[in-house]
Amino acid sequence: MFTLVIGASASGKSEYAEKLAMSLDGQRIYLAAMEPFGQEAQARIARHRAARAGRGFVTLERYTDLAHLEIPEESVVLLEDVGNLAANELFREDGGGAEAVLEGVLSVERRCRHLIAVTNEVFLGGQAYEGDTLRYLKTLAKVNRELAKRADRVAEVVCGIPNSLKEAGQ
Image (cartoon, rainbow, N blue to C red; front, side, top):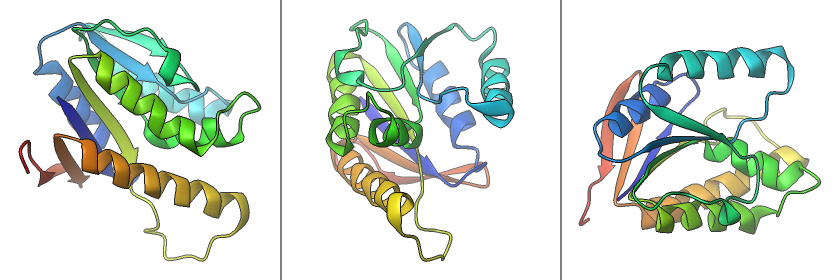
């Protein structure tokens, strides 16, 4: 089962994804793609760790190349998040580029029982973007579209409220 959770920044998508993971059977793996650059990132990571404390998650930090990550077959994987993975694959020296984002997520999905991938809504800012920012946003938008096509379920979280965009069988 593959669930894609999408939403704007601070929409409640992570909390929703964690609750969903808690409702599923299997070893819970929190697959963290955010690199701890700077105090803001470290504070965000600390908040997420505190929210998961005592919930039985094993945390794996992996910033690129998810295609070669070993995942237990019967696991419930919560990928947090596709936006960070895309930035890493596009801009890190060891990144695999745009193709590695989709390939990595789908590789994890094939090897676990349940994948819950959290991603960001893009192009809501109403601004004109260019350069590397535009390349990143276009890449993430394309990856989001492809993941939504392949997902069994897609939920958009707005103000902490999940809205079903796609259910299994649709």
